[in-house]
Length: 151
Image 1 (tube, helix red, strand yellow):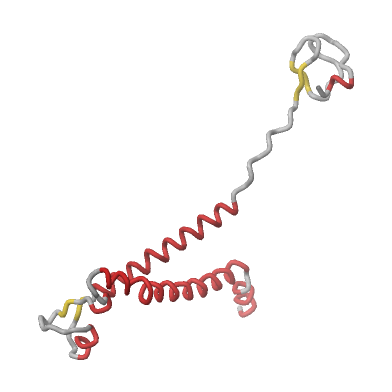
Image 2: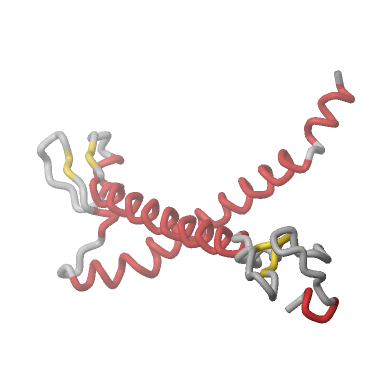
């Protein structure tokens, strides 16, 4: 059983999946940092100096300045600012994956197939269609010359 598991784990697709998962988690952290640390502060500034991490509703009805204060007081909160950050994370990751898949599909596309080689030719005497390798026309029985056979 251990040998079977080793064979399963060492298959190319399982290893590729593991590598993809690890890279995906790291990429998710990069996107989260991009959203939280680079993208949201200017958006918050444009929206009137709003810190999206502190956009919440305290369900107790009391006013708290930050989510941390409300959590310290043990008050349940609806953290819609954090939800907006998470939605933006998802949209950016989905868009990046879309671009990656689109690029990979473009790289995989098969080149256009070359036109098929001709399999017939026209008899220079009666102009009927005959097989390419024919040396005599079956219609008019003319002997085809070698130099004209490939014209």
